[in-house]
Image (cartoon, rainbow, N blue to C red; front, side, top):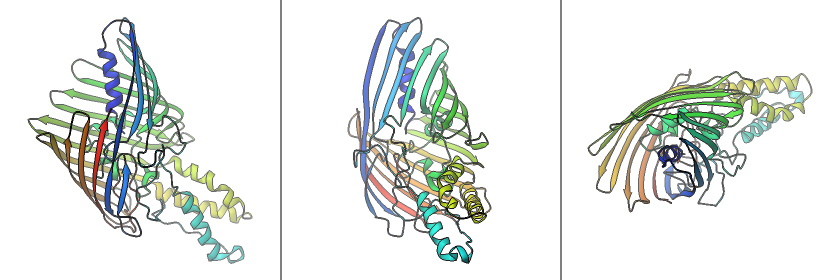
Length: 431
């Protein structure tokens, strides 16, 4: 889930010689490793995981220099799960815990089955909101990126599915580069796991303008049309960022604004993050504010569950649907601020990485979480590295965050308040 490949491709287009030429490049990342984790319950402790430090991928990008400072570019990037060869994945934890961690209860009259019917309804709703596949649910071929654009003397216009301006700044400021058990995004979100994402990583159906100036200033603005946003359900979305990348600094400010299916204010984030490199050190600091009062999941789940409630006679069907909707709103409300601090330190052909992340939940139950990460990454060559990362998540109240990876969310611990801890050892090859 890296913006750096796309950014590098655009930068290369700006720097290409001023002569008519075209080129297409095939590239990718093959990343996999072994993970030992303790999440409680019946969750397996040892797992083979694809895409721990970087999501494994196969991509195609190209450029055509048309002269006069104009270039046509494209980027198509497919997700690849090395553990099974597929393009979809789910939570790393297999605990039978559900996104409705804040609770779900139905009150059913005795004449309609009473407590027994209520439990069946609860199980059905929980099952519908705990799918085995939650990444690339549409099984898109080029789920990671699918974009075409035109570079001009005054910036680039890009069209398609792309990383959002907000995520680009979060990624650049992440000590663990949006991967491994210690990635900043591991506990950015709500208690409902991936269904309460705290950052819009990509957006479908989007138009983006980008510019890079010689003094190190970079900026981007994106507008998402209908069915855009972090899972392609927003009525509309938009975002912008500005970054300074020069003289050892990489610091940025970004804002993303999403809506639900009818245009009500949805996932809104503001990110200020960056790093400063000097000698053998690279220091990181960042904050990320996230709020979602009208998650697209609420309407999506309501439509998904409507046939279940329609089977009951009125007015009971209306009563049950209302109870489910109240639970969805309670569980998928997101109001939090995340903080991260950490560093890299170069040691020979490798680097030590360490970070602390704090998710400060502003809701009444304050399901806060703190994540500690420590790792070492060693370069075997220019293209291949091996790494070991350890992480510990201390959950509070209803928090059930479990450590994840670049390609997949961690899922849930067995019980609210349980800690999650583990070690990942892996290998990454770039081609």
